Length: 245
Image (cartoon, rainbow, N blue to C red; front, side, top):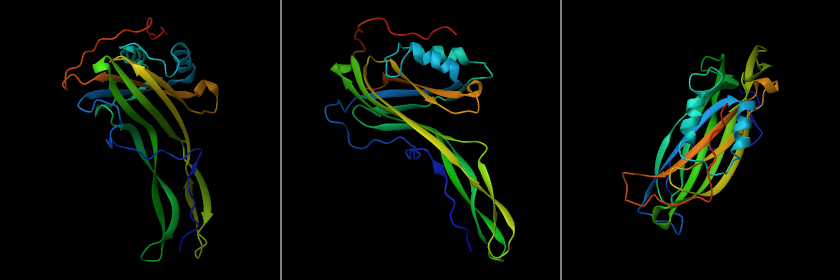
């Protein structure tokens, strides 16, 4: 015998992509070429992240080395963490995804085991960051057209609990009611090899002083072990650098 199913609540449905994939190529790309996509995810106080995003707005091409500067800025600090730093090789014109997620177990319901005793029914809920990228090499390698989607799902911790009465026995038991808040950002840009894009994925907290933000820095470059392409190209002006703390 089961209680009525108690489902997790979402502000937005959590994304399902978890692994790299390469379906049909995008028309107009150079399919023989390969690109390296590196995503660095950094969690830090929201006030500091807001300052970085103000100086380097989301979707603005950033100078090569921006990710390294950000990593050096947070290294060794107790209030910051490099959550993940995955790297992916993808062919030009193909879609791929990178994720940094965790599976969280919770007690969803109660049933009855073989001996007739109440038994918890456990389930899992996933949270973390998903990045989808579709890059295309242009002009023989002097620039890269990239379409990026960044999604974040954050599980509220500790997981909410509710005491219920088990039918048939009258015993009290505790079930859990996970709540996930999700958000999504998208950008399309033309980058020179080695440039990157910055995204900020906010989070809620009981007070502004405790609010945390995940910054996602996505760097796109030609895969140097792949077919040779000229890495030249020029920009219309100086690229933004990371502001000093």
